[in-house]
Every structure is written in C-alpha cells, then in structure tokens.
Image (cartoon, rainbow, N blue to C red):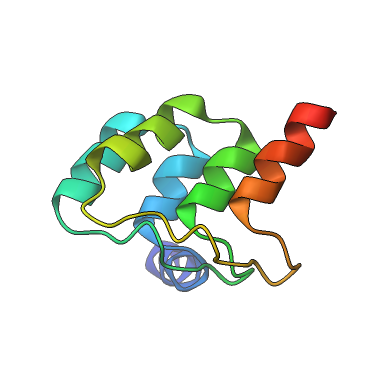
Length: 94
C-alpha cells in the first residue's frame, strides 16, 4: 500500500516539486545537478518556480535560479493563469 501511495504522489508532482514544497534546498540542488527540470509543470500547471514563490521558500527559489542549467520560463502560466513573476508582484503588494 505504501508504494501505491508514493506512485500516486509522484504522478501529481515531480520529486523537484516535492523538494521545493518541503523547503529542502539541498535536495533541490542535487536534483537540478542530476538534470531535473524546474520548468516541468505539476497537475496545476505550476513549475517549481511557481511553487517556491507561492510557498515563500526564498532558499529554494535562489537554488533554482543559481543551480539550474535551464533558464526559468517566465511566461509559463499555471492553470489559474498566473506566471510566477505576477505572483511575486502580488505578494509584494500584500
């Protein structure tokens, strides 16, 4: 049963998403070094950049930017129509 639960979770979000959600910048760095894509979307259309910004994980966001071999897709829209730059601006105004 435990493996079935893990399988369902991994279909919903990538290991990189899960590392960002749990604020584990050390794991984020290792996954990026192993080739994980920070621009992959989860079931809500959110990239890891979206997740880091929404959760307020500054360390993970910095790690995503500093250690990614891919540039952030700043135009990537989640399914609710938000790009992560707009989320940053919105959070600054709150």
